[in-house]
Length: 460
Image (tube, rainbow, N blue to C red; front, side):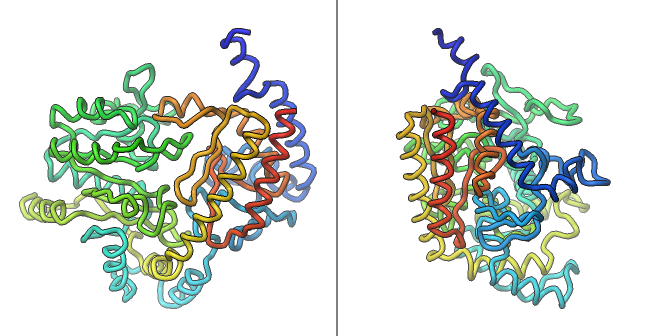
């Protein structure tokens, strides 16, 4: 059979008919197990457009969204009383577990003192030095989401360089920052397909190249018109792509030579260690962004600046005309964020917790790889610290284009629902799994066993 014929009849080495059968039988099992949930949300949540409070809740491949009753540690319980080992953990928002006790205590304490007042609390006195010590940059600001933080940091980059363009990597994830909503299709930069209501040509102010392509990076920076390169240390929101040896060294060398700033977005790669990928591997960004788990699940983000950037930005502010900077939101840097962030930094994001997370992630990596090898599936596993992903294609992958081709939505959806029916929840948008400090060895073993059972059905 020719390869084109094979691709029409199989996905990830699995026959399409078998995938469809698995999706149908597992979907029916999901419905049957959740009569209360189906009655309440099977036709959508009343009053919400599309039947959900946020549109991506419909992107879960289950027949209808899981209606959560409670979550604690690394476990979610739905309204039908079904307990799930949670390896999605809010797609990193709850990477340190649901309601870590130090964070829960801090929230309760602050709730009686006021939730927002546009002024700092005493917790802010501790947070600035904590951020300096942990991530290495001297000056920080607080925002509400990583999208906000990235937008503000890029605005500063443009202000102090006087340049308009931003460079991104194909397949990157930086929230919903406009400049990053571009892709390479057949080698040409275009607006990312599917953008709602976007009437601008985003490629006018954004350059896009492939990750790990040092030659393309050098060419893109040659005209010295790029204010900032915004980069994840590892591509994470598609199929995971790790950096080639020497790539980050080249990225830093070439940006400096071109007078271009480097922004490292650690929102997903904070799984690497207490100081993120940046601290573990000695990256030297000019700007740094971290969102999602920084406050233990309370919406918050941080962005930091080097001495040089802060000095240049201060000079810019002295010279610019008075008026609103276009940065900041009223609820940013509120005392609830301070309280939760301080507790997270001091008591949750500890070296001891990361050591435990890394140990169990290695066990999960080895277990999933063992299953893949046992059934001779053309798949592989990628990992960055506590973040593990199985990819239904050979690997390793080197760039966003390869990651796009490796993505197998029909197969991944079937696997996801089958895992839920076996008591395991993973991320819905890609096959991502996180280990939290609350995750147990027994939960990891159950995930490996469930994955093995699903693989056996697919490979039979």
